[in-house]
View 1 (tube, rainbow, N blue to C red):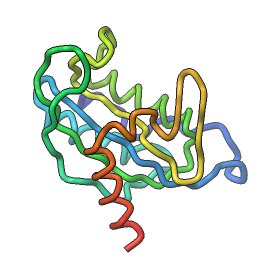
View 2 (cartoon, one colour; view 1 turned 30 degrees about the vertical axis):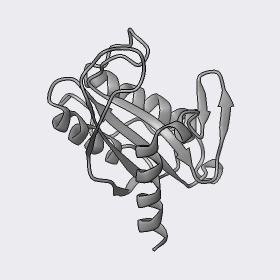
View 3 (cartoon, rainbow, N blue to C red; view 1 turned 90 degrees about the vertical axis):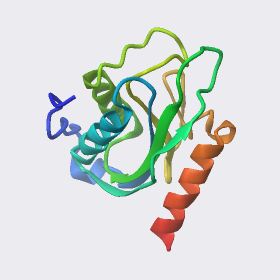
View 4 (spheres, helix red, strand yellow; view 1 turned 180 degrees about the vertical axis):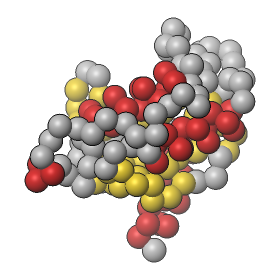
Length: 156
């Protein structure tokens, strides 16, 4: 993953049209050097244009979700402040996943890196390729717990 560019492309929106918002991104890995994949993903997210990391939870091991037999996941969540739109952020996260060797073959299958937009504070999206808040949020207790930790840290 060290081939990731330090900065991702800047959206082509004038600064007056950008919305500054807080987004929460779930990071997960259950293949290879899981800790390394999460660390590289955090660095890449911190390098996104018009974005700064506000906080991160501790990594925790969780059982996989879904019908595919696989090893446990190492998960954590980061809070970012960003001017990227939900679609631009999703595109950047997919590039980060690809740089980590992510191959999309089996739904809910094992992966080197999984990056999910869990929530934006001010924006929501309901489209076939992107739904924010994430449709599985209420089904993942570790996401709810991590989100509460980051929101409490942010709001004091």
